[in-house]
Length: 344
Image 1 (tube, one colour):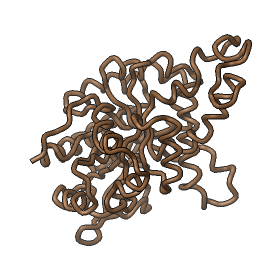
Image 2 (image 1 turned 60 degrees about the horizontal axis):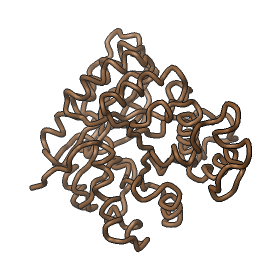
Image 3 (image 1 turned 120 degrees about the vertical axis):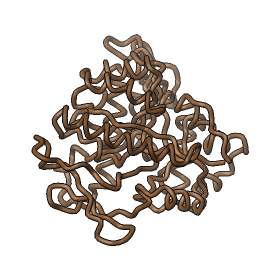
């Protein structure tokens, strides 16, 4: 049994923007041929997509073809709409969340929904978590930055504390990176920019104290945590002054003035990470660094072609059967805080 915890949807249609303040970037769908559409933003084609984004039967058929039994579905990350006014974003999030809920209802057990919230207004987003739970969603999806601010900034801590209090799981997906002026061309925008942005936000969750203040928060990061796991040994050495996670030297670690009370590695091993790393060596490193108990299968369907089967690279690592079963099934439901569905 396999659950894909990283898969996205786009509604078949969006409500008209009308005279909203956010109309300039409000999306619309151009269904230019059967089963295909353009996601139009500001009069330009943001992405051309197929109907697996909204057609439940097509989506179930694709799942069967690449070997997934359950999908955790969340909106295309750009639909988080952090650039809208808060009120417009709230309306947009609620509409999109209702679409996700209807898809889950149409295929009981096979789809588990994650909602989106208007995090550009953290207090408004925190209040919306009750509605997220009322839709039957065990969690939410967030972008890796909110208009250029990493998630570990102080203004978001209250939101994460409320998510922890309510037991809402958080899946953080890479969003439009914030450092692309550092590149001569746009070529590294996706393969380098996105995972680097994810790394920055993970580090901010540790450095800013959110991980310490929210010890029971269940949070996962897309694409294996981006570049962060490879940087973790250096981050840990900065805290401890030692190699290979040996005990901190005198005056280092928690004993240093203003230091974190725990090592960066300890915080990082509370987080979850998906398997979408494109290379067995990278996946092996991630498992060795954070532990198999924190790894979840992810495909980014329908925007990347999944492996067939979706655990093909994972199988190549020769993991014990119980560890493989944890990564492909058990870990995800522990992250979500729910019991696995009974499939028919």
